[in-house]
Amino acid sequence: MVTKIQRIVVATDFSDLASAAVRRATELAALHGASLDIVHAFPVLLQLDAAFAGGDWPARLQQDAEHRLQQLRSDAAALGVNCATHLMHGSAHRMVGEVVERVRPDLIVIGAHARGLVQQFFLGGTAARILASAPCPVLVVRYAFADSYRRALAAIDFGPRSPALLDAAMRMGSQVSLTVAHAFLAPMEARMRMHGSHEAELRRHIDDAAATAQRAMAVCLEWAGRSSLLPSARVVHGDPNPALPDLAREIDADLIVVGRHSGSRMGEAILGSVPRFLAYNAPCDVLVV
Image 1 (cartoon, rainbow, N blue to C red):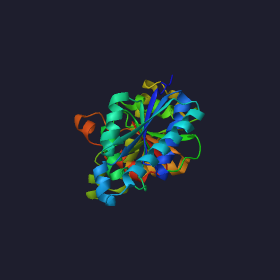
Image 2: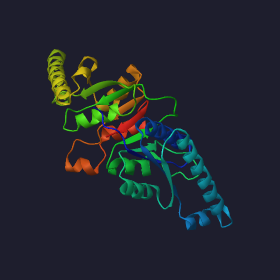
Image 3: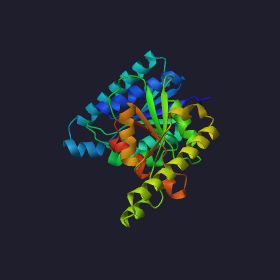
Image 4: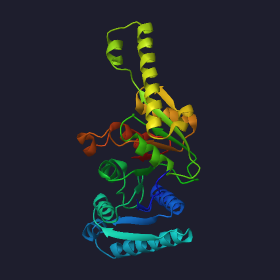
Protein backbone atom coordinates (compact mmCIF):
# COMPACT_ATOMS: atom_id res chain seq x y z
CA MET A 1 0.00 0.00 0.00
CA VAL A 2 1.35 3.41 -1.02
CA THR A 3 1.72 5.91 1.84
CA LYS A 4 -0.20 9.16 1.38
CA ILE A 5 1.55 12.50 1.19
CA GLN A 6 0.25 14.70 3.99
CA ARG A 7 2.13 17.99 3.52
CA ILE A 8 3.97 19.61 0.60
CA VAL A 9 6.26 22.65 0.53
CA VAL A 10 6.85 24.39 -2.81
CA ALA A 11 9.24 27.26 -3.45
CA THR A 12 8.47 29.96 -6.01
CA ASP A 13 9.98 33.14 -7.37
CA PHE A 14 7.03 33.49 -9.82
CA SER A 15 9.13 32.56 -12.87
CA ASP A 16 7.65 30.20 -15.46
CA LEU A 17 9.26 27.04 -14.08
CA ALA A 18 8.55 28.04 -10.49
CA SER A 19 4.91 28.53 -11.49
CA ALA A 20 4.96 25.06 -13.06
CA ALA A 21 6.33 23.73 -9.77
CA VAL A 22 3.44 25.35 -7.87
CA ARG A 23 0.90 23.85 -10.27
CA ARG A 24 2.48 20.40 -9.88
CA ALA A 25 2.57 20.73 -6.10
CA THR A 26 -1.08 21.86 -6.04
CA GLU A 27 -2.11 18.91 -8.22
CA LEU A 28 -0.31 16.45 -5.94
CA ALA A 29 -1.81 18.07 -2.85
CA ALA A 30 -5.29 17.69 -4.33
CA LEU A 31 -4.58 14.05 -5.23
CA HIS A 32 -3.45 13.15 -1.71
CA GLY A 33 -5.64 15.51 0.29
CA ALA A 34 -2.41 17.10 1.53
CA SER A 35 -1.77 20.55 2.96
CA LEU A 36 0.31 22.90 0.81
CA ASP A 37 2.82 25.55 1.87
CA ILE A 38 4.01 28.01 -0.79
CA VAL A 39 7.24 29.87 0.03
CA HIS A 40 8.51 33.04 -1.60
CA ALA A 41 11.82 34.32 -0.26
CA PHE A 42 12.03 38.09 -0.71
CA PRO A 43 15.48 39.70 -0.72
CA VAL A 44 16.36 41.79 2.31
CA LEU A 45 14.89 45.25 1.74
CA LEU A 46 18.21 46.96 2.29
CA GLN A 47 19.66 44.97 -0.60
CA LEU A 48 16.75 45.98 -2.80
CA ASP A 49 17.16 49.61 -1.77
CA ALA A 50 20.75 49.46 -2.92
CA ALA A 51 19.85 47.64 -6.13
CA PHE A 52 17.17 50.12 -7.13
CA ALA A 53 18.77 53.25 -5.63
CA GLY A 54 15.95 53.95 -3.25
CA GLY A 55 12.43 54.93 -4.25
CA ASP A 56 9.33 52.85 -3.67
CA TRP A 57 10.49 49.79 -5.62
CA PRO A 58 10.85 47.54 -2.57
CA ALA A 59 7.33 48.31 -1.36
CA ARG A 60 5.87 47.81 -4.83
CA LEU A 61 7.69 44.48 -5.27
CA GLN A 62 6.47 43.26 -1.89
CA GLN A 63 2.90 44.27 -2.69
CA ASP A 64 3.15 42.43 -5.99
CA ALA A 65 4.46 39.32 -4.23
CA GLU A 66 1.62 39.45 -1.70
CA HIS A 67 -0.93 39.74 -4.52
CA ARG A 68 0.61 36.79 -6.41
CA LEU A 69 0.61 34.61 -3.30
CA GLN A 70 -3.02 35.49 -2.62
CA GLN A 71 -3.88 34.36 -6.16
CA LEU A 72 -2.02 31.07 -5.63
CA ARG A 73 -3.98 30.49 -2.41
CA SER A 74 -7.22 31.07 -4.32
CA ASP A 75 -6.14 28.68 -7.09
CA ALA A 76 -5.35 25.99 -4.52
CA ALA A 77 -8.63 26.53 -2.66
CA ALA A 78 -10.52 26.05 -5.93
CA LEU A 79 -9.09 22.52 -6.01
CA GLY A 80 -10.00 21.90 -2.38
CA VAL A 81 -6.41 22.26 -1.16
CA ASN A 82 -5.67 23.73 2.28
CA CYS A 83 -2.90 26.21 1.39
CA ALA A 84 -0.70 28.52 3.45
CA THR A 85 1.68 31.05 1.92
CA HIS A 86 4.93 32.36 3.40
CA LEU A 87 6.42 35.67 2.27
CA MET A 88 9.81 35.77 3.93
CA HIS A 89 12.85 38.03 3.89
CA GLY A 90 16.28 36.52 3.43
CA SER A 91 18.21 34.06 1.28
CA ALA A 92 15.95 31.59 -0.44
CA HIS A 93 17.48 28.31 0.71
CA ARG A 94 17.50 29.44 4.34
CA MET A 95 13.91 30.61 4.25
CA VAL A 96 12.74 27.42 2.57
CA GLY A 97 14.74 25.50 5.15
CA GLU A 98 13.02 27.35 7.99
CA VAL A 99 9.58 26.45 6.64
CA VAL A 100 10.61 22.84 6.03
CA GLU A 101 11.94 22.54 9.58
CA ARG A 102 8.74 24.03 11.00
CA VAL A 103 6.09 22.11 9.02
CA ARG A 104 8.05 18.87 8.33
CA PRO A 105 6.66 18.10 4.86
CA ASP A 106 6.62 14.76 3.08
CA LEU A 107 7.65 16.40 -0.21
CA ILE A 108 9.44 19.55 -1.38
CA VAL A 109 8.83 20.85 -4.92
CA ILE A 110 11.18 23.28 -6.68
CA GLY A 111 11.70 24.56 -10.21
CA ALA A 112 14.90 23.54 -11.94
CA HIS A 113 15.90 27.15 -12.48
CA ALA A 114 14.42 30.62 -12.56
CA ARG A 115 14.29 33.55 -14.95
CA GLY A 116 12.32 35.95 -12.81
CA LEU A 117 13.34 39.34 -11.45
CA VAL A 118 14.74 37.79 -8.27
CA GLN A 119 16.82 34.89 -9.62
CA GLN A 120 17.26 32.90 -6.43
CA PHE A 121 16.26 29.42 -7.54
CA PHE A 122 18.94 28.65 -10.14
CA LEU A 123 19.87 25.00 -9.72
CA GLY A 124 23.53 25.82 -9.17
CA GLY A 125 22.66 27.65 -5.94
CA THR A 126 19.49 27.47 -3.90
CA ALA A 127 17.93 24.39 -5.49
CA ALA A 128 21.18 22.42 -5.25
CA ARG A 129 21.39 23.25 -1.54
CA ILE A 130 17.81 22.16 -0.99
CA LEU A 131 18.44 18.92 -2.89
CA ALA A 132 21.51 18.12 -0.83
CA SER A 133 20.06 18.86 2.59
CA ALA A 134 16.33 18.13 2.34
CA PRO A 135 14.96 15.70 4.96
CA CYS A 136 12.35 14.36 2.51
CA PRO A 137 12.00 13.68 -1.22
CA VAL A 138 12.47 16.67 -3.54
CA LEU A 139 10.65 16.99 -6.86
CA VAL A 140 12.60 19.05 -9.40
CA VAL A 141 10.21 20.41 -12.03
CA ARG A 142 12.10 20.86 -15.29
CA TYR A 143 9.28 21.47 -17.75
CA ALA A 144 5.97 23.30 -17.93
CA PHE A 145 3.03 21.56 -16.30
CA ALA A 146 0.97 19.67 -18.87
CA ASP A 147 -0.83 16.78 -17.19
CA SER A 148 -0.60 14.27 -14.36
CA TYR A 149 2.42 12.00 -14.49
CA ARG A 150 1.76 8.94 -16.65
CA ARG A 151 5.06 7.08 -16.93
CA ALA A 152 7.85 7.09 -14.35
CA LEU A 153 11.32 5.59 -14.53
CA ALA A 154 12.65 4.52 -11.11
CA ALA A 155 16.42 4.05 -11.05
CA ILE A 156 17.46 1.73 -8.22
CA ASP A 157 20.85 0.52 -6.97
CA PHE A 158 19.48 -2.48 -5.01
CA GLY A 159 20.38 -0.72 -1.76
CA PRO A 160 18.28 -0.47 1.42
CA ARG A 161 16.50 2.68 0.19
CA SER A 162 15.13 0.99 -2.94
CA PRO A 163 11.70 0.16 -1.42
CA ALA A 164 11.28 3.77 -0.26
CA LEU A 165 12.22 4.99 -3.73
CA LEU A 166 9.61 2.76 -5.37
CA ASP A 167 6.98 3.88 -2.86
CA ALA A 168 7.80 7.53 -3.56
CA ALA A 169 7.47 6.93 -7.30
CA MET A 170 4.01 5.43 -6.88
CA ARG A 171 2.87 8.50 -4.91
CA MET A 172 3.37 10.75 -7.91
CA GLY A 173 0.07 9.97 -9.59
CA SER A 174 -2.95 7.73 -9.47
CA GLN A 175 -2.32 6.40 -12.98
CA VAL A 176 1.48 6.20 -12.99
CA SER A 177 2.97 3.34 -14.99
CA LEU A 178 6.31 2.51 -13.35
CA THR A 179 9.39 1.08 -15.06
CA VAL A 180 12.20 0.04 -12.71
CA ALA A 181 15.74 0.28 -14.06
CA HIS A 182 19.30 -0.40 -13.01
CA ALA A 183 22.22 1.01 -14.99
CA PHE A 184 25.60 -0.67 -14.43
CA LEU A 185 29.21 -0.91 -15.48
CA ALA A 186 30.81 -4.31 -14.96
CA PRO A 187 33.44 -4.56 -12.19
CA MET A 188 36.92 -3.90 -13.56
CA GLU A 189 35.44 -3.13 -16.99
CA ALA A 190 37.40 0.07 -17.45
CA ARG A 191 40.67 -1.62 -16.48
CA MET A 192 40.00 -4.52 -18.85
CA ARG A 193 39.46 -2.06 -21.69
CA MET A 194 42.58 -0.12 -20.75
CA HIS A 195 44.66 -3.31 -20.78
CA GLY A 196 43.34 -4.33 -24.18
CA SER A 197 41.24 -7.36 -23.24
CA HIS A 198 39.76 -9.21 -26.20
CA GLU A 199 36.27 -8.09 -27.13
CA ALA A 200 34.85 -11.60 -26.66
CA GLU A 201 36.29 -11.80 -23.14
CA LEU A 202 35.00 -8.34 -22.30
CA ARG A 203 31.55 -9.24 -23.67
CA ARG A 204 31.38 -12.37 -21.50
CA HIS A 205 32.39 -10.32 -18.47
CA ILE A 206 29.65 -7.75 -19.15
CA ASP A 207 27.05 -10.46 -19.79
CA ASP A 208 27.93 -12.12 -16.47
CA ALA A 209 27.53 -8.78 -14.69
CA ALA A 210 24.20 -8.22 -16.42
CA ALA A 211 22.94 -11.65 -15.33
CA THR A 212 23.98 -10.88 -11.75
CA ALA A 213 22.13 -7.56 -11.94
CA GLN A 214 19.01 -9.29 -13.29
CA ARG A 215 19.00 -11.68 -10.34
CA ALA A 216 19.54 -8.80 -7.93
CA MET A 217 16.63 -6.95 -9.55
CA ALA A 218 14.31 -9.90 -8.94
CA VAL A 219 15.41 -10.23 -5.31
CA CYS A 220 15.10 -6.48 -4.68
CA LEU A 221 11.61 -6.22 -6.15
CA GLU A 222 10.44 -9.25 -4.20
CA TRP A 223 11.90 -7.76 -1.01
CA ALA A 224 10.10 -4.48 -1.74
CA GLY A 225 6.82 -6.28 -2.38
CA ARG A 226 6.84 -5.14 -6.02
CA SER A 227 7.42 -8.40 -7.91
CA SER A 228 4.68 -7.39 -10.36
CA LEU A 229 7.11 -4.80 -11.76
CA LEU A 230 9.70 -7.42 -12.75
CA PRO A 231 8.41 -8.13 -16.29
CA SER A 232 8.94 -4.51 -17.34
CA ALA A 233 12.15 -3.95 -15.34
CA ARG A 234 15.25 -2.97 -17.28
CA VAL A 235 18.92 -3.68 -16.65
CA VAL A 236 20.98 -1.35 -18.82
CA HIS A 237 24.72 -1.51 -19.42
CA GLY A 238 26.39 1.87 -19.28
CA ASP A 239 27.23 4.83 -17.10
CA PRO A 240 24.01 5.87 -15.31
CA ASN A 241 24.38 9.53 -16.26
CA PRO A 242 23.79 9.09 -20.02
CA ALA A 243 22.04 5.71 -19.76
CA LEU A 244 19.11 6.83 -17.59
CA PRO A 245 18.13 9.89 -19.68
CA ASP A 246 18.40 7.76 -22.82
CA LEU A 247 16.10 5.14 -21.30
CA ALA A 248 13.68 7.84 -20.14
CA ARG A 249 13.45 9.08 -23.75
CA GLU A 250 13.00 5.53 -25.04
CA ILE A 251 10.00 4.82 -22.82
CA ASP A 252 8.70 8.42 -23.02
CA ALA A 253 8.89 8.91 -19.26
CA ASP A 254 7.66 12.19 -17.80
CA LEU A 255 9.37 11.55 -14.45
CA ILE A 256 12.65 9.98 -13.32
CA VAL A 257 12.91 8.85 -9.69
CA VAL A 258 16.40 8.47 -8.25
CA GLY A 259 18.02 8.09 -4.83
CA ARG A 260 19.92 11.00 -3.35
CA HIS A 261 22.73 8.84 -1.98
CA SER A 262 23.61 5.26 -1.15
CA GLY A 263 23.11 5.65 2.58
CA SER A 264 26.71 6.35 3.60
CA ARG A 265 27.55 9.16 6.01
CA MET A 266 29.35 11.03 3.26
CA GLY A 267 26.34 10.57 0.97
CA GLU A 268 24.10 12.13 3.60
CA ALA A 269 25.99 15.40 3.24
CA ILE A 270 26.80 15.41 -0.48
CA LEU A 271 24.32 15.15 -3.32
CA GLY A 272 25.42 12.24 -5.51
CA SER A 273 26.65 12.79 -9.04
CA VAL A 274 23.77 10.88 -10.66
CA PRO A 275 20.86 12.88 -9.13
CA ARG A 276 22.77 16.11 -9.68
CA PHE A 277 23.37 15.21 -13.34
CA LEU A 278 19.71 14.29 -13.82
CA ALA A 279 18.48 17.48 -12.15
CA TYR A 280 20.48 19.42 -14.75
CA ASN A 281 20.03 17.21 -17.80
CA ALA A 282 17.03 14.88 -17.56
CA PRO A 283 14.47 15.07 -20.40
CA CYS A 284 11.68 15.22 -17.80
CA ASP A 285 11.00 16.08 -14.16
CA VAL A 286 13.14 14.40 -11.49
CA LEU A 287 12.15 13.14 -8.04
CA VAL A 288 15.15 12.80 -5.72
CA VAL A 289 14.42 10.50 -2.78
